[in-house]
Image (cartoon, rainbow, N blue to C red; front, side):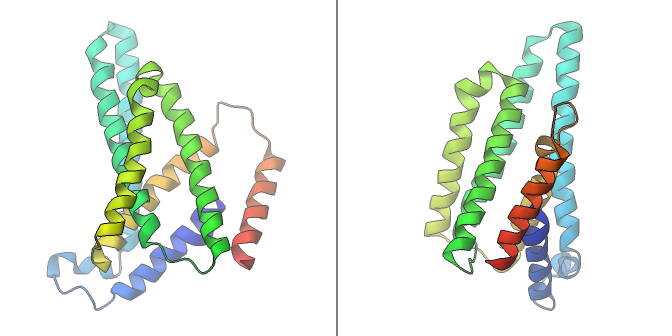
Length: 202
């Protein structure tokens, strides 16, 4: 949570400043001042996927249609495969101020992957253990390898980062602040404050 508000969102602001006056294509020029719209689009896309999964689960429970869940599983896992590949790619493109910054980015993404893993396993159970987790793990490596051998333009990186930011915001709110599980407000606050202090001083 602290990573989203203290690093990821400010980074979008930096991207927006860098893009001002740099986009020559009229069709993309609106991004110079509306990069946050792309982040909102990322949030909408992942929210739509979550609603699709919930709807399919309810429909399957009502009519016992086995093919419904299989199709939804592959759409859901496919989207998170792209999501993880994007994170892997941006790991290479990310600029770190220090080794500590790199370490805390690694910790933030590690915790994020663990929470996503728990949520996807709860949603898809055996299918996730059999196929999903391996695809998601491989996707990070594929994205990282692609980042090592290729480099895309600043506009593309900005769009990808904004889409990723929207997805991360939704998944953080959904998995790290769940309504249906017991949680401790004090522990939540301590975690936020502690990680925020580390991000600000390092």
